[in-house]
Image (tube, rainbow, N blue to C red; front, side):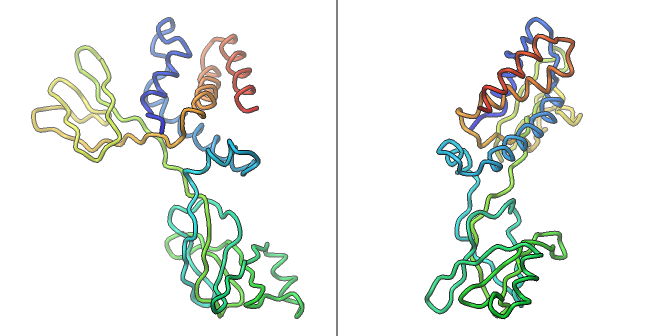
Length: 249
């Protein structure tokens, strides 16, 4: 796990904030980090299990053998579902059957032919459609199947760095990723404008990153590259682009 406040400090060090001042505020950092976090996730998924590093990095996000009840062949994917991996499975008596994940066009073609249409021995499924609250559905054939098990990648938690600032010194204090109420002292102001005091507490919204140290270099180079585009520093942009290419390779 990477502490999001450490990532912020590493970014400031990389762009030499000691020389250029606080050119990236915490709020700007939060917005950029959200984009970088998703970009890295999609990058790993695009080369899913191509090598051991990829397998290890995505290990945090895998959910195995999740059971979904079906009504007339239709069930709802879990709330944190992002992308299916492997083949879903059903039980035919005591025998496990792999379910072919097919496209809409393939489903139509197979169902039009008695020899290829879905059976309990050779079931098929499609991912698509949503229920009344917007959750993605799975559609299994034959529709007599009442339960399917899936492996999937879950959605990313959006990283966030929460803080309050001293009203006199302007020193920023970062809040930990915790459910314990955090005190905002007198003379300080919380991120949303809440004024501190003896009995003032807030719930920290800080969300650390599940990536490990092996991904830190890539995260920082991507952040620096985005920040450099907003700064009048062509050398920083060139250097960060070169580092990003090397890290991604």
